[in-house]
Structures are given as C-alpha cells and as structure tokens.
Image (cartoon, rainbow, N blue to C red; front, side, top):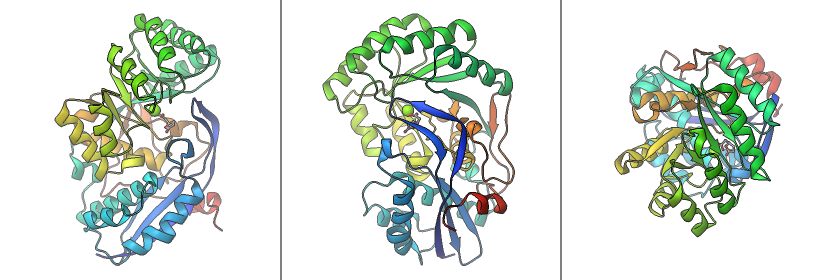
Length: 367
Ligand code: MUC
Ligand code: MG
C-alpha cells in the first residue's frame, strides 16, 4: 500500500467566540487539512493548526513544508514504513504540527487498512474521555458565566483557566470568582502561557493556595531557567510543561532540569507516534500527564480523544477537548457531541472521520 499523494489544503472557519490567552488570540481556525492518499484508494485525514506564537508555523508555512519537502520525501513509501517517514521528515527541523498531521493521517490509513479503530490500535483502554473546558481571558464575571453555561449545557465540570495577565491579581480574582460560583464540585487548574514572571507566579500561587487548584501550567517561561526551577521547586501542585516540551527530548530536558513535574500531551504537535513516546517516557519516570488542546477543530479533537481514550494514564484526568465548541462551523459530516461531560471515540475503522465535501469547498482557501 504505497503513498501516492499528500494534500495540504488551507481552510478558514471563524470562531463565534475568540479565545484569548497570554501568548496570543485565536479568531479564525486557519488550519490545514492533510490528506494522505494510497494506491489502494484508502485516504487518511488529519488537520494541522498553525500556532506562530508557540511553534513559529503559519498556515502558509505548513502548506509549503508539506508540498515542497515532506510530500516529495514520502510519496512512494509504503504506508507501513513509519520509522522511515519520521526519519525523512526529521531531516527538517521544527514544523511540529505539519509532521504530526501527516503522522496521524498515516495512522488513519493503517487503521482503515486493518479495519480497526486507531484508538484500539493505540491501546484500546476506553471508548471515551471526560472533557475539560478552557476559559479564556475576559472580565471575571464573563469567565464565570461562560463556565456556568458550559457546565449546564455539556455537563463539563473541569475547567482550565487562562492566566498570565498583568497585574496577576486580575487572574487571582477571576479564579476566586470561578471557585466561589462553581463550588467545590468542579476541578480547576491554570495555564499562564508564559505570561508572568517567576516571582509573580509564586505570589499568585500563594494567594490561590486555598482554591484547591489541580495543577499549574507554563506560568512563566522555561527560558527563565533558574527562575522557573525556583518556582517549580516550591510549587505545592504539579507544574505542567506544555509549549516548553513539544518534543520527547524537550520533555526529558524539562523534567530532568526540574522545570516541570507533569507534561501536557498534544497530538496536534506530536501526532500519535511521538505522543506515544512522550507518554511512555512519562509513565516510566512516574510523571503525570494531561491531554492538552492546540485549539483544535473537530478533526484535531477526534485525534486527541482517540489517543487520550486509548491509554490508562491519559484517562486519569479530563482531556482538553472542547475548544471546537466556539467555532462557527467545522468540516466533519457528523459533528462531535459532548454529553454528560464526556466525548466518545468514533466507532469504525481508522479515525472514523468523514469530511463534508460541500463544507470543504466553502471554507477552503486554495480555490
Ligand atoms: C494551551 O494549553 O496553551 C494556547 C496556546 C497554545 O499553544 O495552545 C493553547 C492552549
Ligand atoms: Mg498550555
């Protein structure tokens, strides 16, 4: 089963409600649909979300690196030759979401060929995950009403609160308001996207000590090397590396350096192959993980839940699987549904995703 073509199709779907956080804002899902075609007629699909503030990729750069470098290096290989594919893609540094989308689309091909769901191939632990919702920057009362709406509509009871604003007390106030109105039955944790200094992070954590936060993510930059270690060494809750640990090697470096004590796994940047490596590393080192969200659309979310549900360690915490709720539309023929705070893996072989062709024609930017 040989790879005959790799398509990189840019598309744009607006957000009904933009997501704002310390390192950026997302108003439009300007993603790239990746399709891997084979000579047996099987087509694998995934999506790559450009996050210039996190990885330096843009929609144009993702299309260019796939069209000009990856597709010519991979066409002609058997879809089973995944190590060779990665060795060839890794000749090019960076470009994590472009590589990850190809990796996941190839897994989709393999699942379809084997007539097994990718989630079962990966581990088959469960057919669902509990969902955590991300609450972006807004005045505290709006953050509270958003969390209440999400809880009441979808049954979601875990919230990741974006922090990292100046002054840090604004975020402390928002977290306090969320805990006061949602009560002790919900789980809360925070993500600073490197917005605070190490010392403000330490102050904020102290001032929120009574809020029962589950963990804290990227409060200050990992590049503030000693400040970050100092902060992590005094944190009473697990400290998650997200954008500072986008590769298996970075995960090792951050953990061994004492710059993190837990890891966010995002299939959007490590695909299924390197997410498995990261998960295995974390399990072997006794480090907790959380399934993160790269502000994925429904295709990316289906990939994240396929991986997260497949493993015991990733189902211990709710996965971040709900950002797509804020998009005005999407490309899946059958939209994802979150019910009772849970998202299910798609049944069927491969990833089980069907693209609505009419919607693709409407939103694609290359015609
Ligand atoms: C997150 O967890 O940080 C925002 C920036 C990014 O790289 O991912 C999102 C969510
Ligand atoms: Mg994060």
